Image 1 (tube, rainbow, N blue to C red):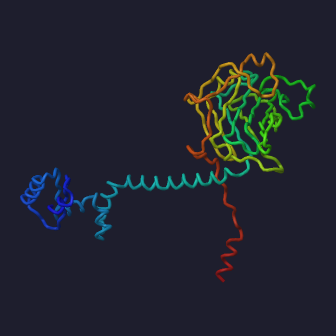
Image 2: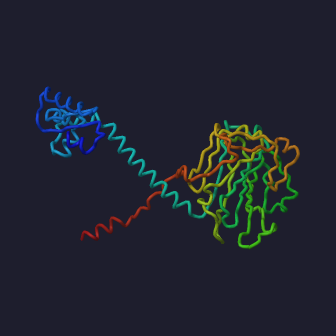
Image 3: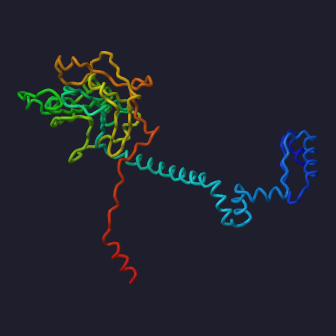
Length: 351
């Protein structure tokens, strides 16, 4: 004890181990000696106390690991009754951390592939009839964090009237589309291009163009409305953006008010991954008057159901896609290709 005090003048606790059995009087004398040296706490582990500790469930592992003393069946039962749940939790947590790490590495690798689609599924509060939905407008405005392939902004979405948005719209000038989601759906996507290759990019070099459109049949009952930005094609003639380019992108759904009031949540998907889920308590409807710059014509009657913006309920102005905060969830696992020749190879190698 004197050596310990000389080495550390501020010593406040002292633990003494010995393989000798001490009497209660001897232990008390040692503790009093420590207190007289201004040591506040003194613990003495003599031979008997060490034996009791090693023969308890808390000491079984130390005894087995360092003294090579095997555990009897009753001792094994006591040990796992005491530590079994904790061991299981450590193992499960370890495997879960490994699985999460592998999933993240897989996503970061696959996110560099060319983008096929980026979709937002609007889940409604219940299944509505087509009459209850009627005319609808569901679009999303998305700004990339960094200009990629000259793309700075992407707008995409759907509305009723099957031929409202068409690249070949002139072909359908005399086509009369009935309003309402039950009669047909039109979809479109636009890109805002900025040419960074030119030293002084003039205003005419900035283009807001329709890069895709489609028409589909109507729906009689609606529980989900899905809008998509798609880059998939039979042949890819030029490089395109990838999912990783959407990291830190800002986006905001733009919807007609009556439809916005029916939305329960937003589900965001891209190329086999679920990117994000925004539930009812995480967004609010901004009813302030505004005019989206979408180059689509809507009648005054349709605009009587005004545009609204969907904003985060945490006072942020727009939603953000962040691959740093969360790893997107892969929606399926690929199957392993079977090799019917494998057994033949094994048989030939054993000969």
